[in-house]
Length: 222
Image 1 (cartoon, rainbow, N blue to C red):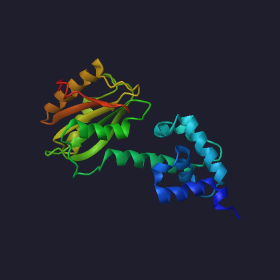
Image 2 (spheres, rainbow, N blue to C red; image 1 turned 135 degrees about the vertical axis):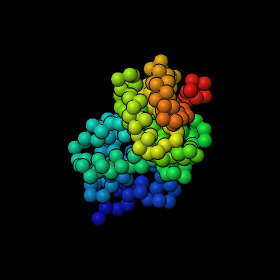
Image 3 (cartoon, helix red, strand yellow; image 1 turned 60 degrees about the horizontal axis):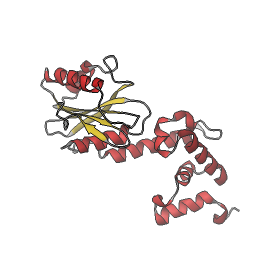
Image 4 (tube, helix red, strand yellow; image 1 turned 45 degrees about the vertical axis):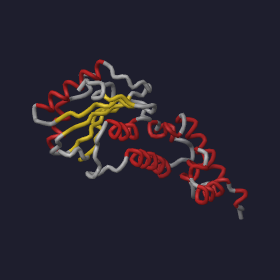
């Protein structure tokens, strides 16, 4: 029988329960998540390989190929992806109609949690009611933001379908530089005008990264 002393994953699990998850290394946290059914040493090796190939725990959600490791089956891959998404949703805050977005920092927190660690650009929307409470968050477009990639009519269509009174736009810059481009400013104007035609307000457009955010409304560009 393997003793606790000889089982580093079980040691990590016990430490998590007694001292808290923040006392574990990234490799130990991932090994505990992989857990059960595979050997302790194998779990640690798999965790180390996944983190090495993905570029670290902050990049797990955007590097699915890194999860294709020998010995890592579909069930464990799904477990990792679900844990990453759960973490994003926790950081983003409660995704329900009780949540109010009163200032750019509130919206930036939501967008950064969901988009900040992605390696590609994603253009998303927060659809809000008359009291600026969340109706729904949706990632609508993927890729470079230019005239061909973002379609204002699709944003208007979804806002009308959800009976939204206001919209906040958000997208990420994988480079880490949050400075809005001319294309960002141009699409903001186009979306604002399209929404205004159906009496829906565009409140803000946030450009986010892992390092921070920029609010176009705070810049006076909306």
